[in-house]
Length: 242
Image 1 (cartoon, rainbow, N blue to C red):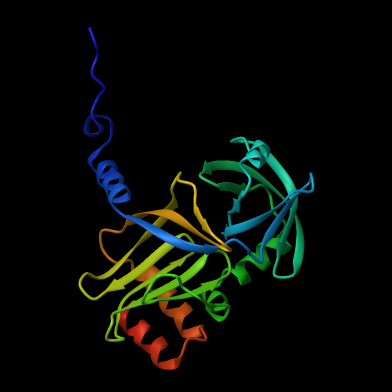
Image 2 (cartoon, rainbow, N blue to C red; image 1 turned 90 degrees about the vertical axis):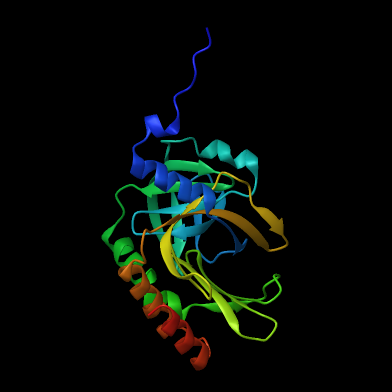
C-alpha cells in the first residue's frame, strides 16, 4: 500500500509554515553587475567575483558551471580576498550552493580583516559608494554599491516615484504607494541568473518581517543620508522610511 507523504503543516510548526509561505510568495528579480570590485582568488589561481559580503562570510559568483567542482558543501577553501584595494589571506567553509552563487563562512579571519570589514560594511560608507547604473526597466532608477548593495526606485508616467526598494547586508527595506513600508531578509534562490551583457538578474526570495523592523529602517536612513543622491530625492526617500 502506498504511504502518503506527511503534509508540511504536520512536519513544520505554524511559525515555520508562515515563513515558508512568505518566502515562496515573495520573489524579486534583482539586477547585479557581473563585474565586482571585490574578488576572491583561490589558492589554485581561479578568481571569482564576491557578490555579497558580511562580517561572517561571503558569496562568490561562479560564471562557469565547471568551476563548481572547487566548492563541495563543507569544503574548506583558501585564497586571497581583494577588498577596497587591499589583499587578505582568507580561509572559509562552503555552506551553500544555489544557482551560480556559492555561500561561504569565514574560518578564523585576521583582526585586520575584521576591522576592514567593519568599515567597509558600515551603512554610511555603503551609502557614499552608491553609483547610478543605467536601468533596463522602463521607469526604474538604479543605484549600486559594494557588497551587493542595490537601491531601486520606480516612477510612473507622471514622473512621481511610486516605489523604493533597498537591498543591503542581507536585508531589504521597501516602500510603495499602496502597501506602505515592509522590511525583511533576502535569500538567494536556486535558479540560475539571467545574463544580459554585464548585468545579470538574480531571483531573490524575500522573508518579510511581520511588521517593519526599526533597526533595518535606521540602516536605510543612515545609508540614504550619506549617499550622493540629489538632495530632494534623498530627503524624500528618508521621509518614506520614517
